[in-house]
Image 1 (cartoon, rainbow, N blue to C red):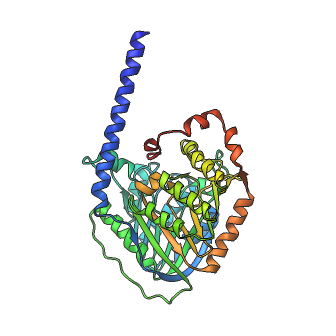
Image 2 (image 1 turned 90 degrees about the vertical axis):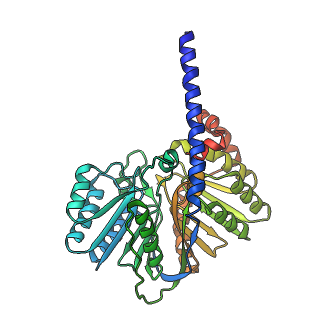
Image 3 (image 1 turned 60 degrees about the vertical axis):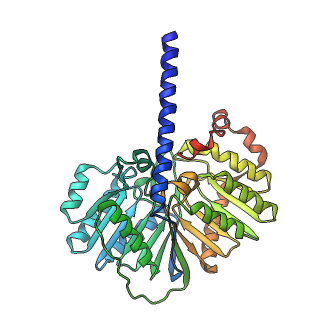
Length: 401
């Protein structure tokens, strides 16, 4: 018995030591990386916008654009699976590459762990230039392991760009039995702003491969929807969100599956509520990351106390990342409202300044709020015991969830 206790104690010490080593390495690596990777906010462009909330309609549009590409296809996804939709996607890219289209494809090193050696071999044999994004480096192994390329960038011919929460896999078609229906938000923009998406893709490509390629601007007629892109690499995103909250005078709508913000963000939302801003938050009940939910309930419960309206999506898995402020600005992209997105990952968002586009997204969100259940302040007392215990996870550990 004594030997078991000693062994358990020693294992605990080792784990604690590893955590502090990891934490130190992440802090040091981030400090170095942030010096050359500040928050990027593009100029305002205009374009024509479409919204996709269902996987099938998104894939139909993306595959159609790939099929019609004239000279270049640049795509990065956080996840590419090994299933029928993933194979159809890769087969289409292989077909276009063999037809002479310049195809570059990247996927996050961990997010695309399902890609097999046979799939890699076939892609390269058929002319697809492929790379894994954000490889682990010996200099800061823990930091480079944690910092994932969570962006989704698709640029066709330098004129069409996609951004949002979808990846490539059968779960995005609602075919994951555990998660059920998958609800997401992805936008397709045609216009000169695609230059910014192309530039960021090629910056990431250079970082992952050392290949330097200059983006090419293409002539496009002006569209109707003003928008700009935001690209974050673990710095500046929290400040951006704080500014959005601080600038709100009437309403804030946040829809996000992973809502575990820092104390600063929670405090700023409380200040907004105190000055009369209406705050509505939509999260998901079903999740693919159960460990993120307990800490989220702490912030959500606090905000309901100050008057926020909190809803849990009930009809499957909600994965959209949306924020609307005062019905004047709309932000859609890849960033979650958690510390991993704000302080570690590479993320991509798009801010839209157009009342018709905002109303279009509002209409979609109204349906999602109808398919959700409001959580009152008292409801948080009835959460399962394991949730009530884990929701007090120390913030430094929440940082890595």
